[in-house]
Length: 125
Image (cartoon, rainbow, N blue to C red):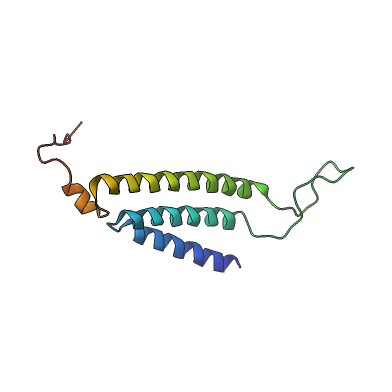
């Protein structure tokens, strides 16, 4: 099972890199969303996939009974899902607003939409 999830993580990373290298804004946003899912799945797989007992100390015991599930990767993934969803919605609204202002989804067309006599960025700092 871990090998299948590792292959799926690799596929997600490859797909997200391919989409991020695209010129279309919507493809870039989908690449960011898939990249977040790939990282979450990687953390979940690194935390070991086991069907163990929950990490709850039974009544009368002072320690957990071995083997138990590790709750840390699950908590990290739950937090990352919430943050990733907020980031994706912000970027989606930002991309839609840029599309409304510039009437373009292609990054090359957006670059052409810049003013002609705009100040050039500094070449050194």
